[in-house]
Length: 103
Image 1 (tube, one colour):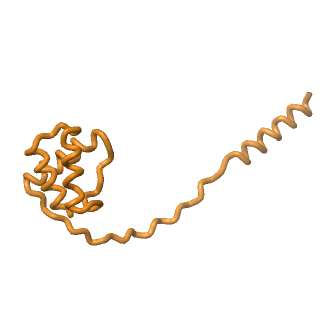
Image 2 (cartoon, rainbow, N blue to C red):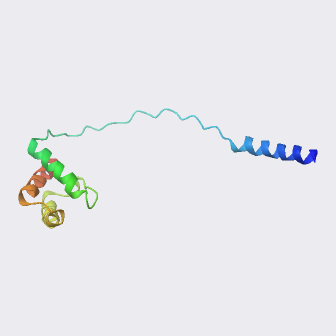
Image 3 (cartoon, one colour):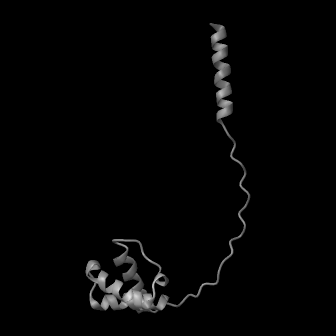
């Protein structure tokens, strides 16, 4: 009986010592290289267009980067999505102006 207890204890200690693993030290990350990004100051109208774009369009799908499409490509996309997003002509004009400003 003592032999079983000692064997069981030894096996348990072996499993516990093998089961715990120290986390490897993580080397500090190299500073990220930042690119110079052209930022445009948003006027109140452009800010409202951005807000409409983010809130109206993101309800149904992910937001696309305005630069992903050309201005000519955006026009039919916005016309098609206007009814689905339930935005009026004034709001779609604000969204269109915001997207055009980001190109």
